[in-house]
Image (cartoon, rainbow, N blue to C red; front, side, top):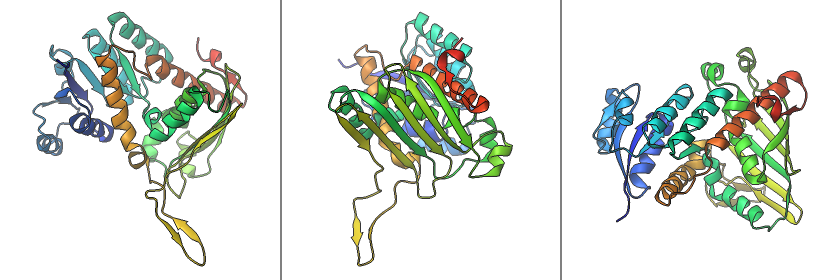
Length: 340
């Protein structure tokens, strides 16, 4: 008989609801029992009722104390992640948590130690690894098709900046936005980052600078295996959500370009046109969110370690911390300088 996992979800905001929809529609052999959120209002009650979700609560302890629940999915605010991971682990429940685990290195390490001691599995939600194009890039590298990776180039540009109030509490562009790119670079390089040099500016909105952040950045990474990474970010690309990855290797090159929203081309005497690329991450990466959850539960069924795991979450935050230090001090920073 196939094991059916019973799941509790913490956090029913935009990403939480996306995960819940995927659990209900696209992930086999699971049962969603409880959703916990700090704000269980009439709107959320109606949304849950329309999907046949019977139990909502504002008390996450109802999930941790429920002996029937095997898995906790955490999609709450960043400042709650570490505590919820710890509580779930102590309750002997496997964990899927949205990135990041935390923004404090010592707190992350303490959390991972608890997860290890309790013998449960933890996966961190860096969903871009499960985009079909980027998975194909990884396959071309891991199969040896393009040889040994030498240069990894990542372009990641948002269509519009978030609200200034969000900028003030986001932890900065390197933790909030580029953290996905640190993970993608490590994933494609097959190696850990040794050193980072980051440069940035405020070129989109002066209010972002007044809030203590930058909106445009470039980083150069040096990996343990000798490869070099180049990442460029901006908070505003007026043409849409620009997401590209290129890996140059000793035997060739592999490139994942942007996908248009359809395959239509319009030919006229003046030009050839295609439609715009997707506007933002939900349009661009919607399938990757479902794929990562299906993979996570397959790992649980087969008693395998899921990736990206807690150590991946730690490494990505370490690179972000080093990048911030590099930007502030205008020099290359080794990861060992922030991992003490």
